[in-house]
Length: 145
Length: 144
Image (cartoon, rainbow over all chains, first blue to last red):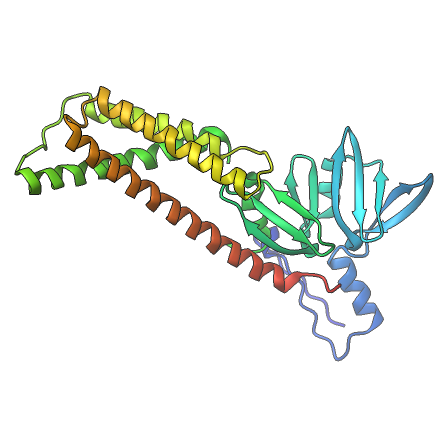
């Protein structure tokens, strides 16, 4: 397959377009890597170390200097700090408050509050607050001016 | 947005709104009484900025990071309405924006109209943003 790479003006303009006759396993893997879905992070659960795929993460929360990763199956602790995960996870994740990162793809809907914050409902039914300081970043990530 | 920036922006917005309101008031007084009230004392422009700053500081009660339910939000808005009304009344009294009860009533009516207008605009902007964000999220949401 012919591969062409062009320089984008900024991270928001980055995109990958694949022209293929059919979507093969290789293409799926490439798409996973491009979407950051192929990446996993180590977590501990009941003493065992597991690898959690980033696309299964709903949100990550820091409580009392400990970091917890929430997935559909449960809550796991990770050794990473929130700011390290923020750098690792990339554009699909949003720092939504001082102590929380949310997977944007897991948000079902948002509701605007009068104090300029957003209340986000996740696909698992949980509700999170997106602080007003991070709403602009969410809009930027979603391509809303 | 940090709090200093919020206060600065709001001071500018409220000062403009007060200036607009005072303009309307002079218009009403001209129509009702035929009075020309264009000439202002030297301190009036500064009093407008000061009042704008005080009202902006009062609006910080709206920007709490506490998780409020609908009732909590309503209480906060009610408190803000009364606080800002107190500031406007006090500044109006100290800086002579009104001379008698009729003048004060005009200030009150103006205040209620501006307050309602600012909230209606704010809610409209917030709901417009909410709609755009939900539409964008719909396009990228995972299937589960």
